[in-house]
Image 1 (tube, rainbow, N blue to C red):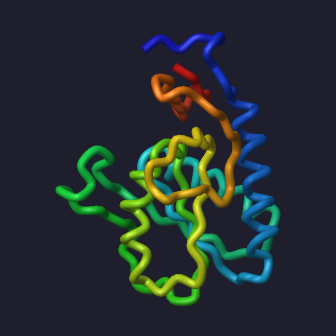
Image 2 (cartoon, one colour):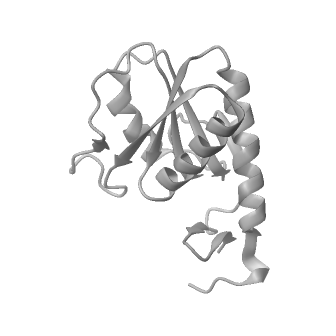
Length: 169
């Protein structure tokens, strides 16, 4: 795949702006909480969760914890879903699932099952980009960038040391 400036939809600075705004929104909706758990879907979702946690710690008194969720995105039922560190209890805790792109909702739908039996107080979803092509009953509570695309178009988020960009392909 060729990534060019012509098909870039978010650059490094814009991604940081979206994360900061999302952190403020998360805090506004959860200002009465003492703690918050951000569960990032490996790999880009977890990186975004780390960035959101950093911003939330800077702007709020919330105690923010991070979880890494790993699942097989194309065959989630035939592979185990892993959460690290291992969950002890999320009773009466607000959890925000974080991923880079909300496309069909399949990844988030399968991830939700790991949290539904943990007696969370509230379960929310944060995505950097929402494509609006959901096939599952999933919607994002916090969205950095909302983009209507065709089914043939794809979004690729690159979050590497030297490059933070999102591309429409």
